Amino acid sequence: MKLREFPYKKRKNIEWEEVFQNPRPISVQSFKTGSVIINRKGTINPDHPSTINIIDKEMEVPILAHWVHHDKKGDFLLDTGLDASYAMNPKGGLDGTDVDEFQQKKGENIAKHIKQNGIHLKMVFLSHLHADHAAGVRELPKNIPYVIVKGEYGEYHPEIHGDFLEGLEELYGIDFSQANYMPPLGPSVDLLGDGSLWAILTPGHTPWHVSFLVNSIDGPILLAMDAAFIHENLELGVTSSDYTWSVEKAQETLEKIIEFLKVYPQVKVGLGHEFVI
Ligand SMILES: [Zn+2]
Image 1 (cartoon, helix red, strand yellow):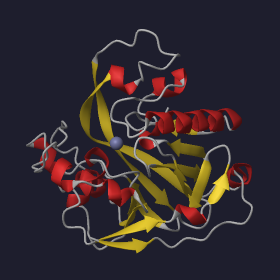
Image 2 (cartoon, helix red, strand yellow):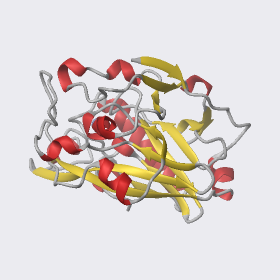
Image 3 (cartoon, protein in one colour):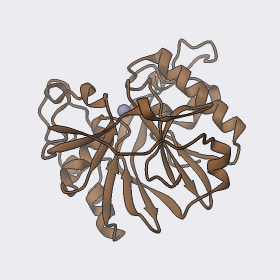
Image 4 (cartoon, helix red, strand yellow):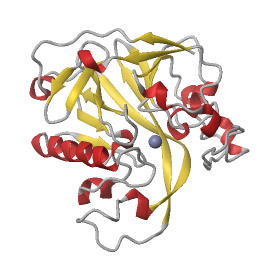
């Protein structure tokens, strides 16, 4: 795999207030590409002082991909969800010592959504390299750029989780050392250069995880991705403890997101495993 630098320009002295005053012709629609069974007790950290009696219970939650359409710049994906191989096989046909298992109904796969909606995909942004967010790459065009945060590729372990990026020859990495610092969230990158779509560094779930902000005319939408799995993470102010690289960092990130939503109540939010609320 060849790693290339994702080109972007730092904006001058920009803050969220100004971004939201200049919405862009961009919209987002989320697709369900399968589902995953997660443990409620690991999804809401049982050791956090705000949690009492979190019941150990399995929950089936959707595996999502988000289609972003910009009237002038075209179609993009934020995460890919799953390709069709999971309808036949919960491991998606992947080899590795610890391959994640997912459920999928026939026709839920990402390529089907792309075809059904007549999407002409220009680029794919990935929040992080976990199979439920990126395995769909296998059935998507290979002649377009795929973008992660520089550093996240170091978290990719095909020998353990399977080579779900198979067929991809290059990846673009965003260098966040040049990003705008935009409180209360932190380092943020204007991905398309017109303030319409932002990547925001939200470490914790993985070391280089990113969330996205879609600055739509209908109002801004924060797609937290796996910085918050379900609405209870936000409501209780408690991050996950399972499936998480650093609970401490994830908690810190979640608190920044909660603060951001408090300062900008007009922002709608979509979560890693829940549709926009
Ligand atoms: Zn994940």
